[in-house]
Amino acid sequence: METLKFKTNIKCGGCIATVTPALDNLEGIEKWEVDTANPDKILTVESDNGLNANEVISALKTKGYNAEKI
Image (cartoon, rainbow, N blue to C red; front, side, top):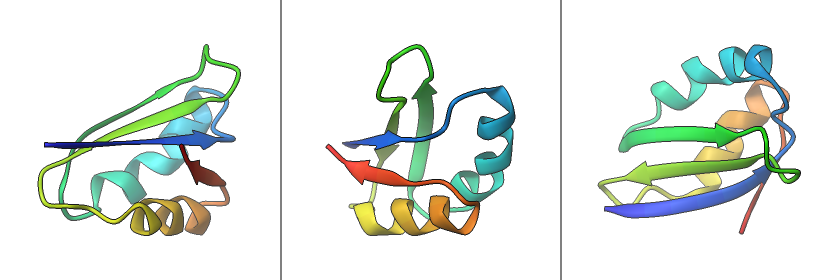
């Protein structure tokens, strides 16, 4: 299991609802969550097949959100 973390601009439940289909449809994601209480809005992704960080960043970008791997 690999854990990737990203600083994002996903701020609220509405934002999470917007990105849910994009993240749920990515191959290899076991679980993901966004800590909206953290000032950096940290997205944590757990993957089982070596998911590339750029795939997550691209999926969020298609929904209008930014992510930076940390």
